[in-house]
Length: 313
Image (cartoon, rainbow, N blue to C red; front, side, top):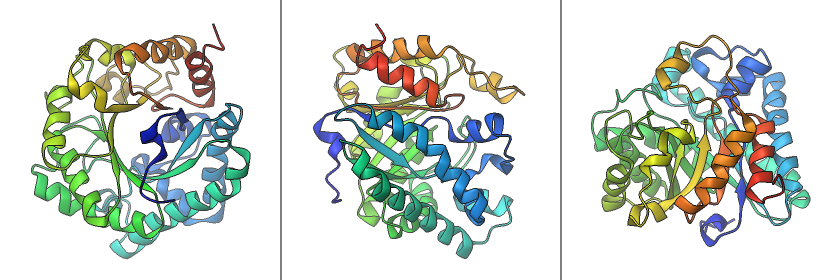
């Protein structure tokens, strides 16, 4: 696949749900620091990761013409988190590349079963906590920090990069610059608090504008927040609205602080979540990449898929 991303020309693209929350709360798999990429280190873990994606690919295969964004399990696979896990730089690079290669192999196996394209996306998470705007403090620092992971994912053959759960425009811009340095398109996905603003206090529109002004990504997305938290922050007619093509929402309506304090999984109401996705069609005219985040699993994505095509109404 070339760097011309098929989701940019329209059509519907599904993705997976909350990888880490599914593994921890539904499968009872211990993930230190919520780092799913650590499962790549043995054959049993690799097989568990592969099996996680299967229900989502099956859902996509049942939807004529739909494509799929196959995301690598590398949200925590950057150097600061690796240091906490006792993984050195050489091993970290190899694991990122391995993750990309595993997704490319899954694409080869599943492509004949889907009528739409499969895009392999290399996930880059925030340097700090996904709910707190704490690091890095500058665009240059972010670009330098995330470049190593971008290079490793590119070496593994991904079609694009995805900077997800971004809490500041500065870090998002740094990832966009890093993607440009490795010659790959990138999607930038922001998370928001219950007031519709980034944890940094920036509005979605301001954050998108800052990134677009210097290193425009292929498109933007919103993840790790319930639609109730950002529906009201999408003013009709603003030019930046047309730059948002993806949503990966949380299942729960709880705030980030409440989720941090939770000891049990809150799966929310899958049908209500699906209807809210459907309602976003009017607010986000270019929205065509649909997935889930914390608390969601294949049941949520099935409801979202059906609601989007009005099959459930």
